[in-house]
Image 1 (cartoon, one colour):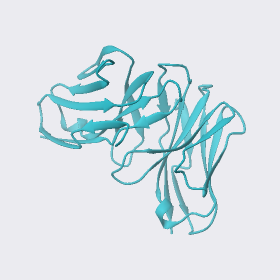
Image 2 (cartoon, helix red, strand yellow):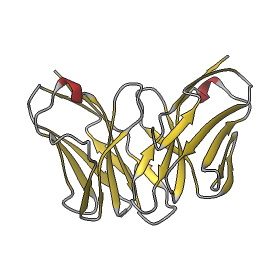
Image 3 (tube, each protein chain N blue to C red):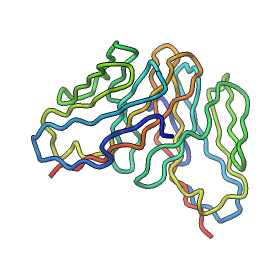
Image 4 (cartoon, rainbow over the protein chains, first blue to last red):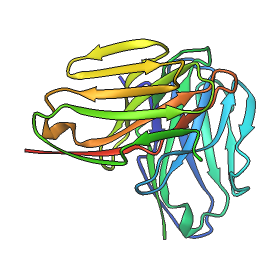
Length: 113
Length: 109
């Protein structure tokens, strides 16, 4: 059974229309990560939560926000998607202790039209 | 300079060849992950290493903590091994998971 689930797998949104991507986990992991991956590039960390502590990467645009209402769920909100935000968005989790494995969702492919 | 570097970026091999992908990192880590991503697909974790060597089927991963270097080896490569292989360093102090640039492997029959 999938332990890190991202919904939806594919999302099409209009230019400028807010969109929310969802990630849920059944592992009770402390840390949840959101990554953006553009074609032929490595995933780029946008932000991560350690429990309720939010850690934003310095170069993450303000257009990207995140919420973690509880341990199991984490959301990525894109307030005004631009064409350049079209990408695969990956969610990952880890327990947060030293030397623990990370688990990945299947990703959400976002298309902006 | 990326904190996690991989080489080569692209690799083409003939079926049956022994393959090595290298990863070097410049940050302190608690663990290093080797991941596999098929085109358009999600990411699958192959190994997590904090020391030594691990083997799973035809895949072997090693890490040298002193040299800050890890390698992924594929023995008797097969076309179904064709994918992007990514190493990701898990920074112990920061909890960040930092990805390398990936190696695109194509195994030809």
